[in-house]
Image 1: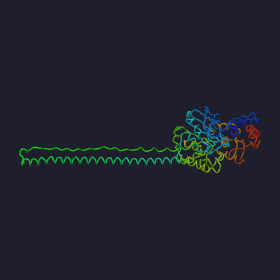
Image 2: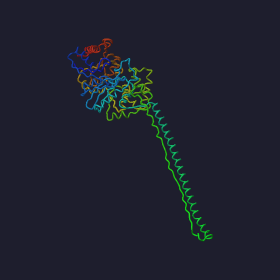
Image 3: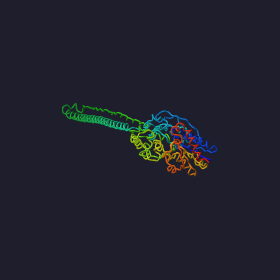
Image 4: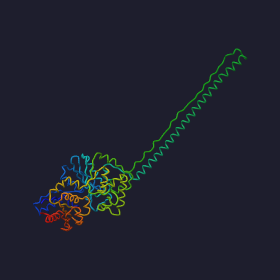
Length: 472
């Protein structure tokens, strides 16, 4: 018999690769001659790089980035030519923080931005990011901050405005004073010049009159008195004038105070009180880069179906805190791009999808992307039975998760699909609506305690039981 094993991770216990190995081990106990094809799967969350590194011809680059609460954490870039594959959960995953230490309102996606920057520096022109399993809810503000985006608080903007107004008033007053002084000096100079000219003219006229009258009188009187003095005598006169100069003065206006930079890397709480956001430095940093966001989530970022209200509880955000946290994200969206927040996938990974959409990312189904890269459709057509699995087979499994994607491929190939899961929380009607023929739970077969104590062995036991029913 030919079978295809295509499981997702069993969250917290087994990776997809480990789960596939356990299923194959258990199946071969019952059917050792089976022809087995293995295709571990991922939907963009944890395990994304492990799965792709087995099928994509590229090299792995190790980097260190900031984790969700600021602690350095290792991460891996899969670089194939000019295409880089990134697993965002390696930088902001919920698994990176112990449950008792989780502070979801402070958790940041800054490390994801560092991963992107490292990929760009390594020569990537196309970056495909797997989204899922995040422990953050910051609308991707940290990612944008790591790439250079900045923000200012309302108080910083008010301070800058007040400073600008004060500077403008000081400048206007200085200008008015300088103008008044210059005008006064000019007026004084003009007055002095006019006075000097008038004085010179009066003196010249008086001198000219005196000079003309005195000789005439003397000339008329002297011949009569003493003919010997006739035709003799004469006087001269002169005048003097002066002028002055003046100059104006001015003062340089004071410089406006700069605004305080807000904490875009401070998690959702860092977005409180934002007054302005500048994304241009981040866009310049990744200019010419093509982004692809691979995610199983289609939710918008805000509102009842948004990141906070739908996924906040699993990250540790209490119900009573959700309205305020969603309000912080709403404020950020109003400043960065409100319409983008309503797009499909904007709410993925606590709003990380939103930040990538702001950078021009194309959103694709994570499971569809992985299925294409692993050749799942071609493999399904070659087998008699398809096996898949995950930690909890529940209602969320229908929404773009691995099992839903694998079941669709199996149905398109007209092959039955059987699920092995830690827990099975949906009924047969819901299963069949997804294209799943049957489902088997580890907790039912070996008990919850044993399932968690020995997940590999427990999954192998269930796989052996499935083979007993389905092998031929």
